[in-house]
Amino acid sequence: MRGSSLAMKGAVLLVAVFVVFKFVAPLVTAPLPMSLIWLYLFLTTVGIVVYGTLSSESTEALLGPIFRFLGGDGLNGVAKFARLAVLVLVPLLVGGQTYSELVPSSQPPAENRTIHPAPPGEFVGLTNPVPNTPENVMMGKGLFAAFCSPCHGPKFNGNGPASDGFNPPPANFVDPGTIAQLQESYLFWRIKKGGVGLNVEGHPWKSAMPRWEVELPDDWIWKIIMAEYAGSGQKPGTWE
Amino acid sequence: MVGMPSRHARLAVLAAAVAVLWGTPVLAQETVVVRVKLIQGEVPTDPTAPIWNTIPATEFPMSPQVHWPKRILQVTVKSIKVRGVHNTKQIAFLLEYADPTQDPADAAALEFMVGDKKAHFAHGQPMAQVEGGPVNIWYWRNDAPGAADMNAQGFGTLKKQAQQDVQAKGVWKDEKTKVRFKERKLIPRKDAKGESAKDPKTGDPLFDEETKVVEQDATGVWRVVFTRALTTTDPNDAQFQLGTFPNIAFAVWDGKKLESGDLKESGSQKAVTSWWYFNAEPPTNYSIYFYGLIAVVVAAGLEYVIIRKVRKGQPA
Image (cartoon, rainbow over all chains, first blue to last red):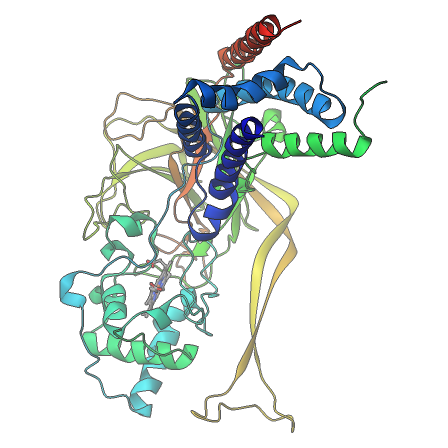
């Protein structure tokens, strides 16, 4: 019957919208706040109503089955129980939603920190001026052990003895998500300017990464960069 | 009964309803927030006040300060337990940590951001691309009565404020406790012949890493309470609103005197954390329940109206 199919299609569409935004979207992005999902559901509902009430015929097709369902005459079995459930649940949902909109949050606001924000222009495209010789790598490893390993760990994995108190934790260079994605030029920026060199998206006020330019000469930093890649078994990212 | 659905169908509808109602899963992030509980009456200025036993603690691991010189690679205090209470006027934080010796130079501090600008956790040091603000530091030291209410905006700028608003009191007890921390060991890897294994490419000796959380017995506990009004008249101070999530950071010094005569930890050589959060619990607002209830009643009323209308409109 055409009638029941329009109301049914509307219901299916609403459920689909809910499932997509609630459960599918978080697979690719950050979870959406419930208030946003409600907004999408509301807009979808408005759309269905506008479409459904274009003609008196379609109005009946849309609202008729809903009204008959709510009226409850002639329903039995699962349908009868579902009607009862809907009648009870809808007010509870509305009440619960109102409550959760008003209740003060018990969790800190989500702070979405960008781990790899864009570097300042002068740190784009620099090449490592230090020749990649075993001696230089060895010296870099020594410097890394002295200056970096307390936080980033003797095994380059972020598990240093001084790493526990810091949030965000020191980067794990063995993880393919850190230096393997970055160019040497980017590391040079991060090591030289430290956590306080990040832009606002990187939340510089939280980072324990020191600003090494005040302590280490540039050629030491370049040697440490070679050692970081050698020691963690990674290769620098390349220009695509 | 006529027309009752099968048990399974009913259960399915119920399960669906529960799933919808439970739409937003609550994440277990408890440990990053100090829950500052609302209490009746005066906030306790004494670390041994019994009320502290009723307040849940949040534990934060601490790092030796290796962020800027002068660094330190080993510190006494590996973690700190923090509790908080307020009575809508005054706020109190209790720090609890294991320190085997009571020394005159033992010290602890809390740090907050002042104003709306973000401040770096290391003394509000300047940031290259973000305009930062100052930090407010509450400092207690065993041999100085009370607390120092201080400000900093960059290394070397720490100074005592003209207006002092913070009180503190520390009590050390020769009491048994447990310390939990991550222990890390590097174990030289052996080859088949039992000799130390080397990286075939570089010839570097190879190590395996062993990390485990250990719990050690310890004797000696510091409990230090800091108290202040939630808001003060001093523009140099951090100001706290109920229900918000201000940042908080911690520092602890073991002021034990070494044989050399130097203190084990002092100045920038200390145990630290970076920024975490606290939340001063707002008073329960009963009007929220009331508004929720109104919403239920309105929705139910609407249903009633619709059903009546439908039933009337239907041919008998």
